[in-house]
Image 1 (cartoon, helix red, strand yellow):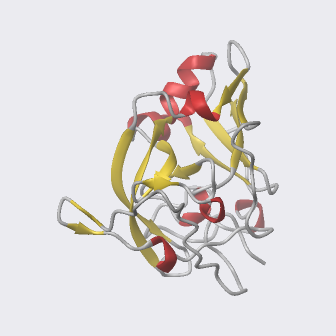
Image 2 (cartoon, rainbow, N blue to C red):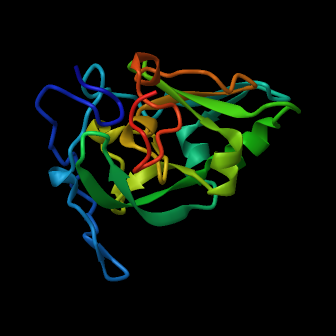
Image 3 (cartoon, one colour):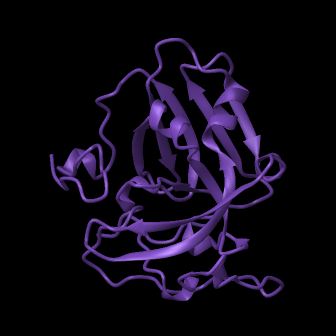
Length: 208
């Protein structure tokens, strides 16, 4: 089965999906980036395809007001770019330049209620995973809409992939359609509910 993070027992997708009018960046400040076509890629139901024009990101749960943010709105926020390696629990990794918007900015739009401590990310394919609110804010974690300076390909998670720096790849949700703020710090996502460690710290324990 394929997964949204990086755990799989089936062949990996390696298509680049780069649009014809875009040029992929393969080096950033002296750091060599892994070409998209060489990056391993998984999803629990294979690649998902989302229409840019009708897409909205729903932010709900313990917030002052539920928000529905369009793709155009997402890309209008001040962008953050950083080089971050994705480490898979299976033992492989790749390094890429990610560009997107901090999760904190999106949560500020909705207004986080007192007592909230966890954020759940939901994907179009039914995948989900969670991370602590403090981790997301303290590390300025972003949801990326660009990869190596090109629009995130459909096969790579368009329109949004979570860049969960320092966490194993199963925390890096792709094809994100909804974000829920909660006080349920024991929530277990797709792979966590199947025995993988909920903290998912790189080099930490892989199983509960």
